[in-house]
Image (cartoon, rainbow, N blue to C red; front, side, top):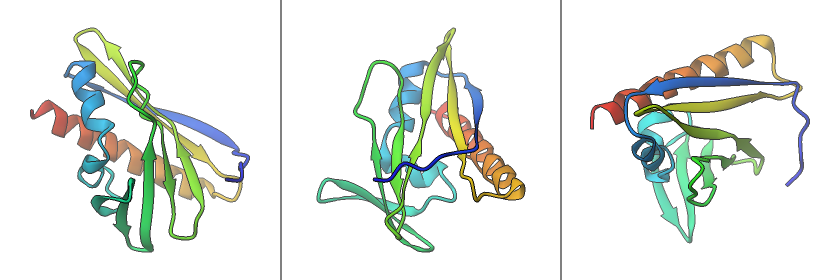
Length: 136
C-alpha cells in the first residue's frame, strides 16, 4: 500500500443521543455500511474473510480496525482499481450520549468543489447514522 500525501483534513462530527457502546456497535459493523454510507456501495457481504460491497464502479473491499475499547472505527476502503483509502472515524462518549467524528482527507488532486461535495456527503452519512441509531 502506497502512502499518499494529503493537503488537509476536516473533522466532521455529530452528537447522537445514544450510549457510546450502541453507536460503536452500529458504526463498526460492516454489515451496516450500505444503510448509512450512501455513496460507498450496497449488498455488503463477507467473502473469504473480507467485507465487499457492490459499487457503481465494481466491487470494493472494506476492512475495519479490530474491536477496541477506545471507540476507534477506522477503516480502509479498497476501490475496484486497487487504491486503498484510509478513513479515520471515532465514537467518543459525550455524557449519556456520543459524538461520532469522521475525518475526511483531501487528496492533492481533489478540487475545492470535490472536497466540499465529499464533506457534504459525509455530513449526510453522519445524520443517517444518528437517525438510525436513535430510532432503536
